[in-house]
Amino acid sequence: MRFGVIALTLALFVQPALAADAPPPNTQAAKSRLTALMEAELARFPSRSGFYVKNLATGEEASVRGTDHFESASTIKLATLVLAYRMAEAGQLNLSERIVLRPEDMRGGSGIFRFKGPGINPSVRDLLMEMVITSDNTATDLMMAKVGGTAKIVEFLRANGFTAMRPNFTTFEYFRGIYATLDPKYATLGPEDVFALCCAQTVLPSFPAPNPARQKLMQEVQAHPNGANLNKALLERQKDEKAWFGIATPAEMGRLLEGIEKGTLAGPASSDEMRKMLRNTLSSGTAVASALKLYISPPIGHKTGDTTATTNDVGIVYAKSGPIVMASYNNDIVGPTGTVSEMVGHVARLVLEYFEGAS
Image 1: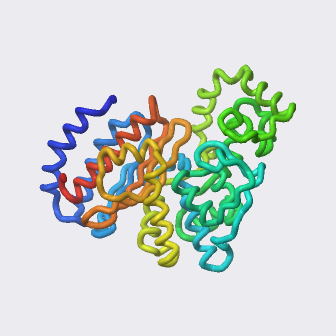
Image 2: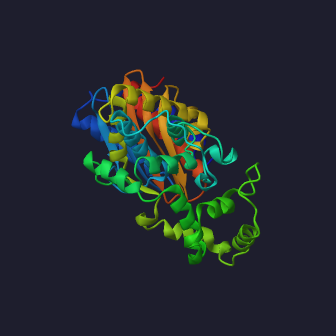
Image 3: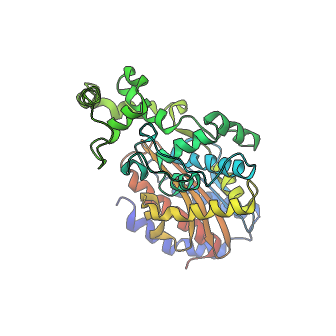
């Protein structure tokens, strides 16, 4: 590990003194000190990184690049989650409704439904749960459609004062865009073809149907002359925020999480369900979650998001002193994303020690 022993030694010997000497919360000096701590840590990251923190018990907050735009990756799915619960409260969505998964609904990438195949019938609540805890992309696109699509999600966000955050695509559109980067003619591929290109070699059922046309497409894409340069092309594509899966700022995502925790964006029962979903994300086995468990012992409710040269983690740390919102965004990573994941866990620990002292 590039960061391991030296950074951990600093955490154990420097940070406890900093936490013990910290001035009372809500003072400008305290805010500046926490910001300086975060700035110093993020300066070591091999990435463009932003971090937002708010102690909900004291109101103290700090951020580094808090209002900058970042590729949200799957963290933007939380906007769909909140909107779905709002609609359920208004009688516009039935959380117990069963949805039969069709072949055209299946999506690649993260999640579990891709391994089960069409025909199963999860409830809307099941879909929301998987969208959060395993970041399931099949569930995500079904729920985005249920709440009215990207335009309705953006409308909801703007109406509630989130001026930057937005999803740009469904997961199907985003993954199809990757193949269109390989060759523009793939911009018209249908959902089943995109799923086949992603997942035909890894799913267990005989799905998607290996018809001659689809087999020819898969062979063509695999042998495409632009394949060798695809990763470079995708990195270039990431420079344009219109090509991102979604846009988020650390501060706005922090405010969304605060609304979930405090129950200001939805009613008490809905907010409780959303908090429980976030708490279950630790079972998803993501790299960031594993890194957090290395450094933090309190319960955590969070949502991760990873894509090309990007790894994000946003959530709530349930500390002894009260809930602490943290939103970490890391784009343009140089080298393994796992290195940054571990560094995020380290910074989260330092923030916790700042508020509570070393354990």
